[in-house]
Length: 286
Image 1 (cartoon, rainbow, N blue to C red):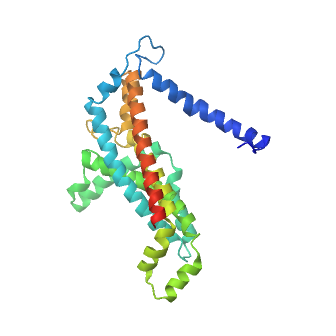
Image 2 (image 1 turned 120 degrees about the vertical axis):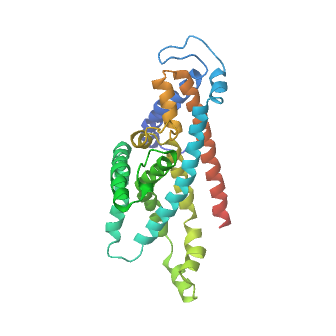
Image 3 (image 1 turned 180 degrees about the horizontal axis):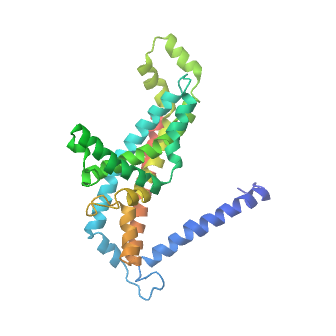
């Protein structure tokens, strides 16, 4: 670090200052306020761990955590499977590869709120009309139950992020030496054997990156949840981010909401770091 030039630190300083002002300082202040009776303007009394004790008895918060964990588990698996599938498809020698890349990546360019309203229209109106026309009751009343609301959020998230995860896998697939694949073909290895013994081990670092991104994004989703289901019916599809926002701004319990945010931050950080550590070990084994 001592050998770094002055220009290096001059270029790095704005990033460090921005990181400190936007992330580090608010985190420190927020953690402090979570131990007080902060109302958004002032904090007149130190209440200790009162908010933290209460949140572990808060059914709405605990239910939102469980719903978010289930949602994240399903979404992470589907996003990585679909993203890798897309990447394998568009890296084949197809005339439409560039078009397919654009089509698959396009939904990621649309904002979460807009996507939520688009899919809300599809689930409520289009699904209902198709269900009536075909006599399929399961397509009618989407988003009106916890189950359909859950899968609606999963479909929306996968549709939005699959193209982004595809780009990560493409970068690693294109770095696989062609000589290895050709040698495997000469040795008589079929497509599945080539994927299992060559492609999969060499794209293992991509799994680490994409799983980290999908995990952190799935836990932090708010705008799609707000516009698609708004937590309904009866807050049964309410994710942690929305529950924290409602606590802080709708119920005007700023300190209590901040305590929930601190616990949420610790939970996501612990899960993400554990996932990265485990995946790194798996990369070595592969």
